Image (tube, rainbow over all chains, first blue to last red; front, side, top):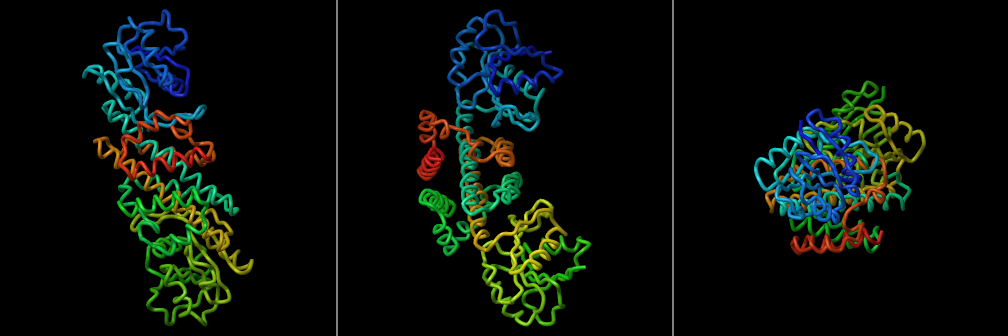
Length: 231
Length: 231
């Protein structure tokens, strides 16, 4: 049995608490970051609070034994001041209230020594399937890549919806295409998967598209078209 | 039994031929666009050839009876010269060789009269589930929206992969996030679904991200960040 204390009440903390609660190998206690006096000892303490609060929570735990980790995609491992430190970062966009299936979520793990890394692997496997050893610097790059594939992709969806709304076309018509586009890159690389007027350099279609966009949309259309053609 | 003649040998034609072949209500004959002499009569003739060739194939069929439709997302219905004309456009990105499940693909239908539109609906329902009455102008806008949600989104995936490759991070770590981002907008609008540093106006993270991108990626990052913030 691995004893885990989980600090925090936010999205990540509450989803992790639920998952650990169902894991047979884990004994979990979830505590509020405002009440850090007399919390039970644990093999691993997971600080699942907002990025800005990680260092200060770590400070308040200064004499605590065991491994101390945080769950952030961007904060360096060294924000934790204890000697045995690490990162336990589940890479997903968590929505409040939604049920999370951790079996499909990759865990990015980091620790200062091999045995702590192995301990984090056992904990990750207890609720999920895939884990990766990712350094602080790689995690930073992964987070940047995630901005493109998640936030910026979502903005492409929004522009698509704006165009549909403006012309009374139900946006739901595009849902299957959106899902297929996402699934496809599980099998082939995005570069191989690319199609469309930019890729074909279909100048007539590109010009006709530009005529139907507002100024901001035109700027985005031109820049991404150019970027596709230069790649 | 509805008799359908399907003209063309490309991706869309071959996927449609397979699907109609399995539909109990449809009697299908698939013919090559180079051999349009003596093709059998049909209730509906589907011209599934490249956009540029639609008008010329329609010309070659000039005395043909029945409803004549094309399958293009961008060509106007009027590219067909027969009196009974229409559009039968399955909105999806078809990949050669891959199996296509039409039950999940929306059909965008257009015709000059109501009974022909109803005929196209019956044919669409024989292989799929959802169909929409979409005018030529709406179809054009839908195709433009599809460039954003498919081609441009795919380019966001490519930039994400480039960043991962450069730093020896496996791109597959991002697959579950990519799929989740796509699924999410089935339940909430892209605007509600937006998260990340642009949305939060987290200037420090934005600046640190920009430092880690090449010039072209910086341009895209800045423009989309600005667009998210103005929306």
